[in-house]
Image 1: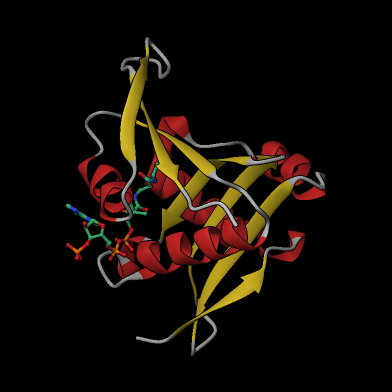
Image 2: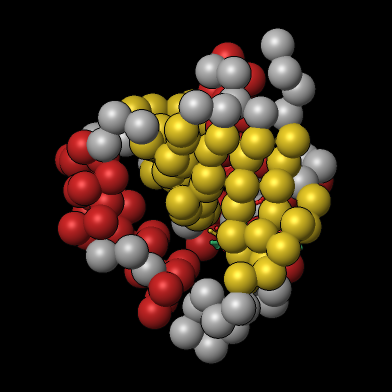
Length: 149
Ligand SMILES: CC(C)(COP(=O)(O)OP(=O)(O)OC[C@H]1O[C@@H](n2cnc3c(N)ncnc32)[C@H](O)[C@@H]1OP(=O)(O)O)[C@@H](O)C(=O)NCCC(=O)NCCS
C-alpha cells in the first residue's frame, strides 16, 4: 500500500483521538494534551494517509538540540502490520537526520512486543528502565543513535 505524510492539524483531532483511545486505552493522551503539543514549536507531528485519504497512523516527537523523543506513535487497528509504523519511523528518522538530531529516545512497555520489535528493526538499543512509569508496569527506555553530519 502507498502512504503519504500529511501535516497534523487540529481538524484531524477527532479521527486521531478515535485511534488514540482504541489503541492506548487507559494510557491515551487526552485531547487537551494533543492541542497543547500541536501548538509547541519543538514538536514534530505527522499523519499517515492512504491514497484514499484515510488516516492510518500518526506520530509526535519532541526535540531539543541534538535529541528527540517519540511522545506517541500509533497505527489504526485496520492498518496494523501493513508498514505504517515503519513508514512513520522512516519519516521521523529523515527529519532527525536533516535536523542534526543524533539521539532518538523512546519509552515503551516491556510487554509491547510490536513497538519493541519496530524500534529494534531500526537499530534502537535498550538503555534503561523507568520504574513504575506506567500505572502497572515499568518502561523500557530505548535509544536510536543516528549518524552525525
Ligand atoms: C507498534 C506499532 C506502531 C507498529 O505499527 P505497524 O504499522 O503495525 O508496524 P509495521 O507493519 O510497520 O511493522 C514494522 C515492524 O514492527 C514489528 N511489529 C509490528 N507489529 C508486530 C506484532 N504484532 N508483533 C511483533 N512484531 C511486530 C515487526 O518487526 C515489523 O517488521 P516485519 O513486518 O518486517 O516483521 C503498532 O503496533 C501500534 O500502533 N501499536 C499500538 C501503539 C503503540 O504501542 N505505540 C508504541 C508506544 S508509544
